Length: 400
Image (tube, rainbow, N blue to C red; front, side, top):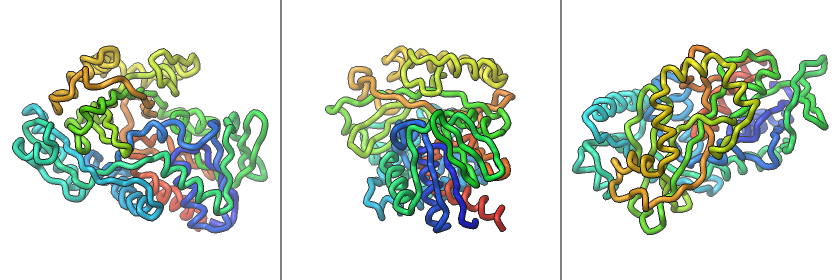
């Protein structure tokens, strides 16, 4: 890539990682990151539970599988270099029914194909050796699954961008993207910048911003709110690391689980409730524009027809703490509804195609000098540095 200006829309961890990769790989390249918020890592990165995934769940050969494995290694080394939190607390994926055991064994085969480090199957008697208060018929133990602080990682990436001469322009809501003779014009309400290349990493707004740049409508972002409970201090030591259910293979969500955070707190969650606003962190949040986007996308209705029963269960758990914790207690019986209180929430930018399928893999579109990251849900934070390498490789190949 010759010396040029590269614009990045989105100051979450993906945008920051790509900016950092570009300034290091091609010294002299001017990187300008813009974001509508007044600080970096506000939305999905800022509401992330901090898990560094080991690659158990992902289709072998997919971008998720490949980039998660590479990204975990890069992130581990980066956190060590920058003295950022990184703790391999380990994860149990616990089967509590015979059907769970069948799906867990299939998951173990997939994890083996992905070369997940140190993964092993354990029986019911071994579960308490790792998590004394967990229970189940069997489990997968991933000792190298870790936790970190993704907002701090994103902030460290941002520092490297600016130290290399790049620019991060905040409070810059993008309203237009147009191609001109001298490059690509990124317009905001009060200002505009011109760049040679543009990378869209707009997270919850990735489809609408990519649309401004001329990309096709699909897949459309359908927001799902994930709500958390926080375990009261007197019970938080009952969970040492991460305790997950065996996921339903129909969905890219991993189910309500127990997560120890780097600050010592233990969360329960998240669920996955359809949100009526892209930034709908509260149940009361409703956006007319976002509702219109949902209602006019055929995939929304096809998804709803297939999965409405699951949606009803998720809403019930959202409204009833007792129902929410009833599911979680199957894995840690000693933590019940009176041992938790409602905490924060996040919103997952889930891409849904026109046929109603929830897009599982990362999806990146190319439009000449414009690259649009259209689907980057979990494990995108884990994979962020590898996603950055992947995008930079694509740009370099085009310049050869």
